Length: 131
Image (cartoon, rainbow, N blue to C red):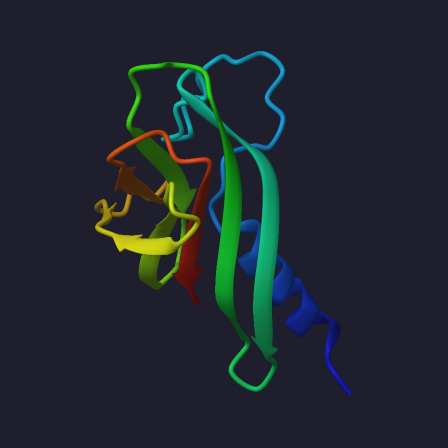
């Protein structure tokens, strides 16, 4: 039988996944977030995760559907904490997932780590594999 703190830890891990707030009505930049809501926002989130209860971990990917508000923007910055990123992909114009480079910034004790994803174009979707 699972202890309730296991579910708490897994829940905490899920909430630390990173993602931009899905619906930020004010569009004001949050001083405790790296995200640039004034440039791009996440409209939909699809998670495909496997839970390993023995190791108290989640492994899988997150698909983010993006809405661009700045026509010049070519970077998505996401908030992360305690994640191991395996790869980042974009859904290109040929309807194929293509792996692209990313950069995980230095850890800030309050804000976590910024995940910088520079894009060749304003992609509609990005996929992030992590655990």
